[in-house]
Structures are given as structure tokens and as C-alpha cells.
Length: 259
Image (cartoon, rainbow, N blue to C red; front, side, top):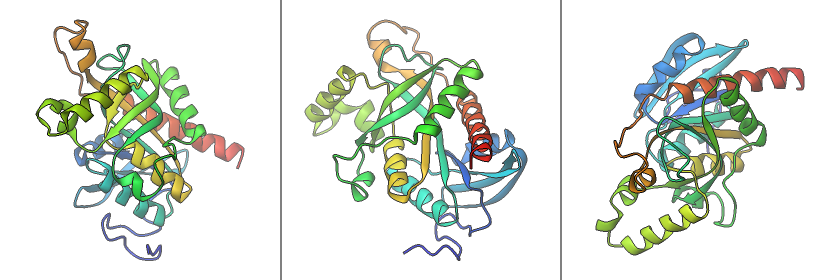
């Protein structure tokens, strides 16, 4: 059982040391850049893959906490941040495009996630959908539009194995992986990433408001279709960061107006 009155084992902070609103990148090295988009940024601490910064927006403390890669470490961060009082969490990260309209450099805002992970199964049966909070989703969509970023909203695939996607042919279960990938394509799944399903499902179990916005680094399906022959990639996640920050600003204003 998590105790809310003591320092959390993995993230190394206690209640009162973080804000109610959190931005969750995977990469610990991205936290300082995200915090710089807030007011009064300051480093709180770092333990393992969990690098924590605080800043403010509209007078509210906003926390940036990295989660590392994948579902298990993401669930730990979500659990322990929630035990410290966090109630709203937005994942900011990168993804690989699947649907052909998703170009390198575009944003993908997740309206749901395919639960092809293992962690979410510890929280909910497979029939339960992994979806974000509707207010957070709308805030992300409105923010991307207001900031002038090209974005797509729809379902993403959350996986556990990076190389299971990128090198499926050499895996012992290649047939299963390739068949599922084809299914995601036919179902209009926008992109592939590694944390959204866990965040949405754990968030639902804990009563949190969650959302996710991603930068599309590259789209292998566009390359295979001959649409992006130069194979250019985009790694600057600033548009996703600014979208998440603006979404939190809007949520704070909205909740102050309608508590």
C-alpha cells in the first residue's frame, strides 16, 4: 500500500513537494527543457529514471517528472505522483507514425490507445478501453490548434517492445506481430508508442485526469509507400511540449472558473 505521508520509494518525493498537474516525458534529459516553458522552474530531485522539476502556471505548481521507457516505470511514476497529490497528468513524448497522413514533425494527440502492453493488464481486464480524460483531450486539441501546430487526433498503439515493432521479421512470433500491425493499419491507428495505454488505464484505476501528445519522429508506412523517400526524421519535441503546457494552462483556468 502506498503511504501519502512519506517519501515515495522510487520517485523520491513526498506530498507537498509536487503539484497537482504533472507533465510526464519519458526521457529524463527532456525535463529541464519542459520546465523552462513554465514560470519559476526549479529542480526538485532525481532518483533512477525519475527526474523531477517544478514550475508554476496561473499560480499553480506544475511538476515535470520523467517516467523512463515503457509501461512498468510509467505506472510507478503515476502511482507515486498520485500518492503525493497529483490529479492531472499529460504524457509528452515521441511516436512513430502508422496512418499515412501522419508526417514526420506532426503532432499526434491520443483519443485512445491499443493496450498491447503488459502493465495495464494488472489494472483492468482486456475489455476495458484505454482512453484519456475528455477535458484533457479537448484542452490538448484546442491548444495545438491555437498554437498553429499540425496535429492528428485518434487512437495510438502502445507496445512493450521497441524492436518488436522495428524488427518484427526476426522475432520468433513474427507472424503474430505482423498480423497485428496490419490490423492496426486497417483500423486507422495513427501511431505507435510505449506509454499511453498504461497511463490511461492506471489513471482510470486511480481516478486521475490523463492525456497524451506526441511528436511523430518518422512514419515507416509513408516511407514504404514511397511518400517520404528521403527518410527524414524530426526529433525536436518542442511543439508537443508547448501544446501540453498550454493545455495545462487552459485546464487551470477552466477549473478556477468552474471548480
